[in-house]
Length: 389
Image 1: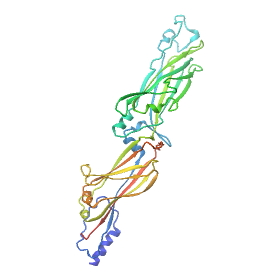
Image 2: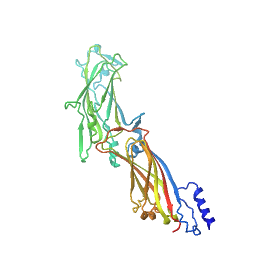
Image 3: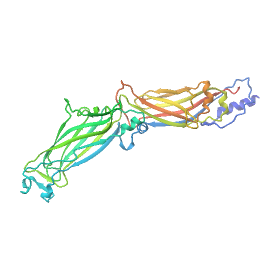
Image 4: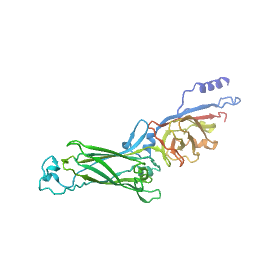
């Protein structure tokens, strides 16, 4: 009998790493019950790494509008437009260049330029997707970069008549918010200058942010559109010129830096196989625990919720929800214990779902999201078996 016991102990001492499904049967009938042997085994389940990109894309943000820099992740919308005169000057002068001091007599005595396409909108559909997935993103420092290139030999001034956002407020109402450039004024003038010679241009770059235009106000709601409206004022000198097919180009970029700001909520779920069905030793358990080694490189704490699903991907209801918090920029281990009443239900579990959640409160400090931020998890199940029962 002693030889049998020694042989059994040797099995557990040299046993190789096991996976989540043991699929071995042990005949323990000949073990000497006077020894009180209660061996323990560790079942490696798996290792996962969840990057911050997974959180963002899982929240409903398409990867084609994400831009990574060395230290920050951005949502970026780009667009451009060209403004052309509304009067057909080149019908009067069939030349590629018209100098205003050399106009033919049939031209109108007073040239009034008009420009079409001075109004438009940028569709911002990302917030609708976020809300639909139960997540919230409230950027605190969005920016609009505007570049105006003037190919005209005419000094131009661009009057921004308004920038506004349209969307649904937290109360569910359609809402329009206008940008304010200071002292309650919703318009803004930009002097671009004159092209020095045909084929070249004068350029002016303007940044609208929370200090210039109050862009953060536009994102107090979940905007569906950013609308803009502007007009061009011309001061036509005698020696001015205009080049055919080269007038005024406007490029714009809406840049939303991804931050953990007040009200931010992002979540992501990973699924691992966890199959203990058919394992007879479950009925002899003295102890069952889930061991989780983690490393959180995010600069915010992350809550981890562990759910157990059956073969039909339904939650095993008799196993209590298990969760814990991973502190910011830390690594460590955490053990989740099962009650004895949950041992039998563990056999019904075929999958483990790990739901990571970032949720800030109203006192949170804004922190940029680093593109390389991630959470790494290593899971093992620890089982202590009473072979005497």
